[in-house]
Image (cartoon, rainbow, N blue to C red; front, side, top):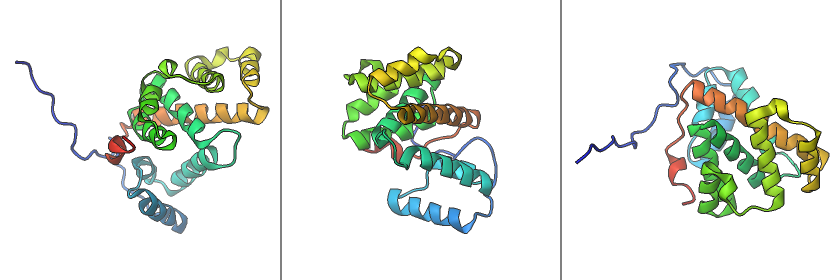
Length: 196
């Protein structure tokens, strides 16, 4: 007969650490209100950082600059990097949250699943394959990155600033994945059903 696993649908805790929320600045209170208005919820990653107003501000500023500011990389391409890196690192939070973003931005739920499971199985352009190969190599063996790796990105059509942005997004998510794993950060349940 076997045994059925427990249902995994109970609302998750934000993280394993019991850190009370700090008094938030007006700017961060407004940021949370904007998230609630636009998303319908406050991402748990922000609530995890909210135990320290300055850390929340720094994290949000860096994230928003990397993922939303003008770049030669589209928002979707940056999310694809986030998911490919998070797949290598087995980061449950980021695979769930950023996998949902890939599904939403691409309008392709299959692409979202491929990015989370194995981007190499996806039908990708040479540009996207080079971008993700570089991000994964940076994740798995950063000390092996050399001029040939950067030249491969140039040949795929990326400029110098694009190479910086690919590297910065990949590096940020390596840090973020490690923090999420260290504190057992859990994704908001809404991400699981988005854009499916």
